[in-house]
Length: 257
Image (cartoon, rainbow, N blue to C red):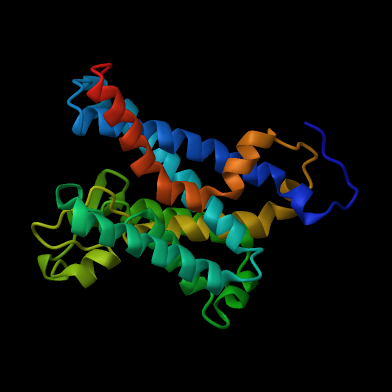
């Protein structure tokens, strides 16, 4: 892969980011289609309940959040973008509350990403983070993410290795669930609390600080259809599940699945 030193327009330089986002959206659509087939249309796919499917799902989410943190480093309208994504997440939650309570989404990935952007848009916050050395910032942010990855399971540790058990008093209500401490009986089919995921978002931000000049100057243009999907990721995210369900229902109605 060639890296050219000449300065390029921002739309061209970001083609690689659009491609990564679009490629991840395609994976997300495929993963959610499988979810619908298993949980809504009764397909007995044991592999979907295993580690492979979990790694697939986590890879999709990690990529979205890391990429969102990276792009936050260069966003000129971070508050507006963050508010739009946050409200889109709230809209999805409202729709599931009204029409699909058995598949309720509370504090999903859009709500999380929007919240992270809104926090970073607080006056002075981004400037303060830019003062912090980028490589230590990457290591510290990812280390905090690893240590808090399972706070919803009441412990701190290095991913699944337990170090400290957290007091049950932290897990009280929907506000604490939003922060990362869900109360007993809390349920969401797509749950991404502010913690630990803010730390992964900040990891992406510090990656931008460390290597954005090299990444944004990559001469590779991606693949136009995938780039297009990446540029319209939010709209596709909002619409993809109803479209998938409608298509699968037609297949089910005509006994094709």
